[in-house]
Image (cartoon, rainbow, N blue to C red; front, top):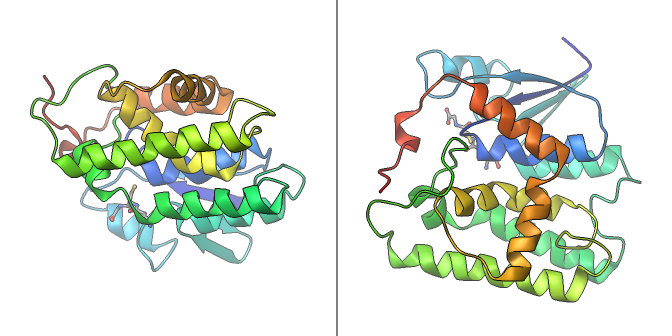
Length: 222
Ligand SMILES: N[C@@H](CCC(=O)N[C@@H](CS)C(=O)NCC(=O)O)C(=O)O
């Protein structure tokens, strides 16, 4: 096996896998990838061969095993200290860490009602989602607007240059786009900047080339 390997799920569906993959690519950190198609008869065993936690993503770096998406992103920031994966300013960095943890731990209603499915763009859910989803979307938009206003002057991303916070929210941007959630202009411009990243384009291209279908992610669409 190569020195550094990121074990991920299907690119079309695995939102947790996208976050560290994008972080590593944006930081210019070399790695090979192993894609394990999820929720098949042998998937769990294949994942467990890499980590007892039994979930992807997993980073294998020599004899180190790093699991949990945000922990892998933090590890990437240590591998590439000059890549600006966290904002340089301590206050901005604290805020970036706060919203990254908020994303990692929260937004369960949105994640359940609007699963990541990169083959879907500009569709609508067949039935209105529960009200918590609207509350979570409002909170996400508030995060985008506040970050762009307070910290975003130096570039198009939440903290100007690309940071782990952008990676943490990238899958959410795909969900909002898939299910036609309108964004205010500043948030839309932010979303456009993330989709225009070359690694993001590459991930979506690979995702659409996959052939597996995971039924739980095929929500009814109007
Ligand atoms: N908190 C974990 C969540 C990881 C997770 O739920 N991964 C899903 C795929 S996106 C998974 O491995 N599912 C396969 C399974 O549970 O067998 C992280 O941030 O990495």
